[in-house]
Image 1: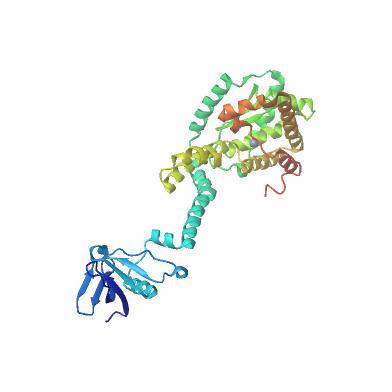
Image 2: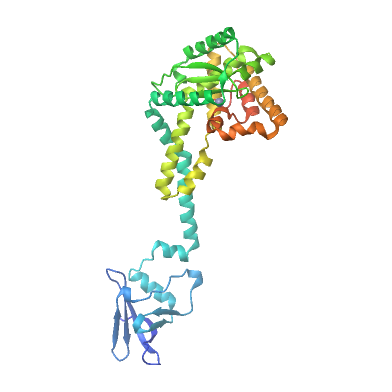
Length: 372
Ligand SMILES: [Zn+2]
């Protein structure tokens, strides 16, 4: 078949260009280029002997095309559209990188898909994998970690409680009653039966927190705040039910596992991105309770308190007092009161209970909307 494609061949020896027929032939290693001059002379060049020009998009068609032929000079093609068409017919597939150079829409699409995959992994893949892995974490690992953490806290922020023994006993009896009542439908992890233990400690202001494996700590500040505002044991029982919720949902273990999954997953997805791991993933997950964890623990408290004939309204009032109390202290002492939070990673984990007004409102309405 005669090539309808024509061009001028500057062979580098003679000054005049020669009219040639241009043919692009398919080959195992990509198309080869054949030039036929009028005098019967033929030049055949393998794919790797031709400096193939970059491809272009339909909107940016060049008027003329110059093809580098190395030691054989160069070829000027008058009909770039026909050249591109013949090249495609001969099986010249542009690499993805070439597509990305010439077609911005393709480049944007690739970027979008990549970003989408990373986001999807973060949004659904990480929590899913974390749930599967959390099931595999033995309770002994949790209690071992908790023993160490509580020891560290006792040597740093926490001091022995000064709440009278009789008051402690009364609250502990209420706590034990809650722990005994745990119905099967409130147990998220089947077969997970931690021994729930309540400790009292001084320090850290008004606070209560759950450590993995069943240890719950309530500070004297929390008991005193409830007494000061005459909210009574009902409010404290609600807080304890909330903390039992964190334990039974294994929230701390989940956060630690999610952090690990995210680090490993991002590493696999993006190659070596240690700069991202050290900053990005800890920003993404943080070590503070997530808002949905708080909602889960609140709904757990509502369900458990309702079952034991209790109410969560006093707890809601106590939460609001904790927040306004912390606000007062911060404005009195300035920035100094923030210091411990930044020094100890565990503090973030233990004391971050965001969006208090919304939570209090939900608790007062029996958790209605959020807990369905
Ligand atoms: Zn909480």
